Length: 183
Image (tube, rainbow, N blue to C red; front, side, top):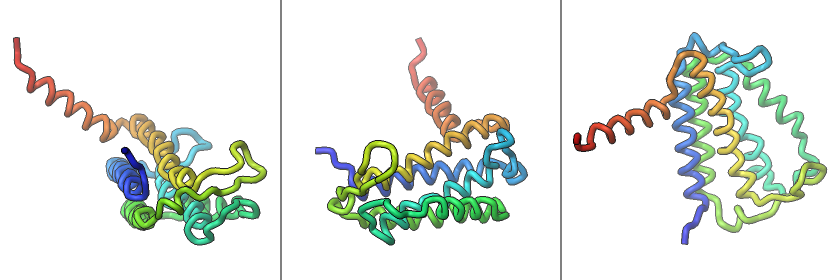
């Protein structure tokens, strides 16, 4: 039987974060202020957003262990995240923030029990469904990062950078073609 639990969740998150860090490393620091459009986050703001937005789930799931999201002050949490995004940081500081917060989150994930992940959390006054498992809510951190990472990959293209995952795919294709016997 295939099982996707805490260990697998932590490992898959580590892979996602490693890829995000590689993008952060590939983009030159002088492009960290680049915005694909005026109302979009800059590269730096997007990377910081990715690095700190897990805190919403950490606060509600780990610290408070809520079984309902009723009464959570999400606007205040989002203001805190926005304040973090707009703090001036160097490329090295942003990469370290991605690494350290990613490591902390993944270590927490590894220690979760099957029972904890299966618990239901009520989501009143929101869109359907009216509840989700902790697993689904915690998984949303990885999904959120992948969503924004795809935006960063498009931004890389706009800056003339071929994303590392594309470079790796092209290298594998070239190796496969080179290994084929010539007829």
